Structures are given as structure tokens and as C-alpha cells.
Length: 119
Image (cartoon, rainbow, N blue to C red):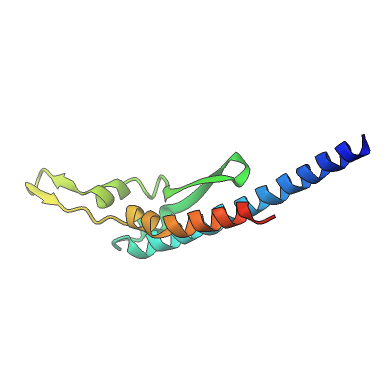
């Protein structure tokens, strides 16, 4: 019985350590995406840049990064483009979130694989 208790205890310690490692990788990557997006956003008033923030879920095991209201209400116009009805012209897209995500996707997956591989 003591062998079983020891194994369960080791699994719990392993689980706690892995969760902490995954949280660290998620937080590092979220900050990297935030910084990259802020560097790519077209500067007008700085509102969109300031509004880009990570939001963590599931105890820090997941995150979304993007413009938050109220300052980031117009970010989708910049990211995807729009049409100015008064000027009757299209305003081209100037993506910043998509490229920031793509630039950090593979490094994130590599770090996550490594974290889950290490014992």
C-alpha cells in the first residue's frame, strides 16, 4: 500500500510541476505576442497599442491576447480594413495581431513540447 501512496504522491508532484511549467510558457508567449503586436500596430493616438493585453483562463493555462475595450474598440478596423462611406474609399488592412501570433506560434509550440517532455 505504501508503494501505491508513493506513486500517487509522485504523480501529484509531477502534475503540479508540469502545470507551473505550462503556465510559465503561456505567460511568456502571451507577453511576447503582446509586445510584438504593440510594435506592429499603426500609431495614431496610442489607444490601440495601450489596449492590447493578455487575459488568462483556466488558472493561467490558457490566454487570449488582444485589444480590450474601451480603448481598443476600433482595432478591428485596423486589423481587417474598412470602408469609409463618406470618403467613398476603402481603408486597407494593416494587420498587427495576426502577424504577432504567427511569429510566436512555432516557438510557443516548441517550448510547450519541451516543457511537457522534461521530467
